[in-house]
Structure formats: C-alpha cells, structure tokens
Length: 102
Figure 1: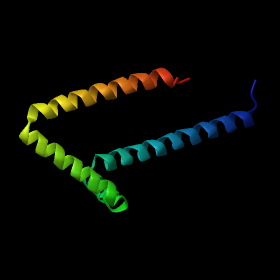
Figure 2 (figure 1 turned 90 degrees about the horizontal axis):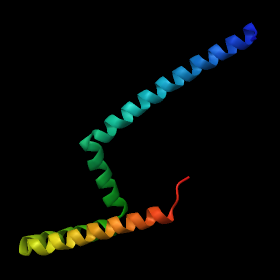
Figure 3 (figure 1 turned 60 degrees about the vertical axis):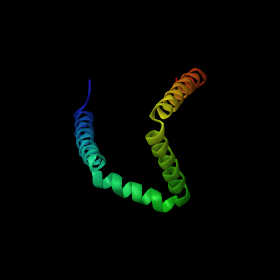
Figure 4 (figure 1 turned 180 degrees about the vertical axis):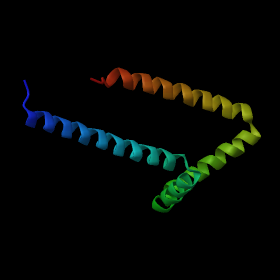
C-alpha cells in the first residue's frame, strides 16, 4: 500500500509533531507558572499605572468612594452591588442572545 519512502516520511512527520507538542507543553507550563507569580501581577499593575495614569487615578477615586460609602452605609453599598450584578447578568444574557457563536 505505502512505499518505504512514504512510511519514512510519515514517521518523520509523527516525530516532528510529537516534538512540537512537547515544546508547546513546556511553553504552556512556563506561562502558567509565570501567571501564578504575584510578582508578575505587581509588575503588570505598575506597568498599567504608568501607561494609563488618568485611568489609575479614576479607579483609585472610585475605590475610595466605595470604601467610604461602605464604612458609612454598608447596606446601601450592598444594595448597589446587588443591582450592579443583576444588570451585568442581564447584559450578558442579552449579549449571548444577540451574538451567536458558530
């Protein structure tokens, strides 16, 4: 059915695919370890703050306002967070209805 040359070509292709799979597996493991490192996330946060100072300032102000409101009126903040989560889940449902994945 197959000649010796075709079998040898298929064997070499199989070996190449196996080596490629092993190399990708090693890359995925190293990427996973890098993503689990707290230092990576601290560096990313610092880089984002340097690249987008206005956004960082706005997020800081927003977090401060939420923290103050939480101390002053904890129930009000919980009510606001409940509404926000309900809105987000509704938007996700509408998006899933409008955007069909093949």
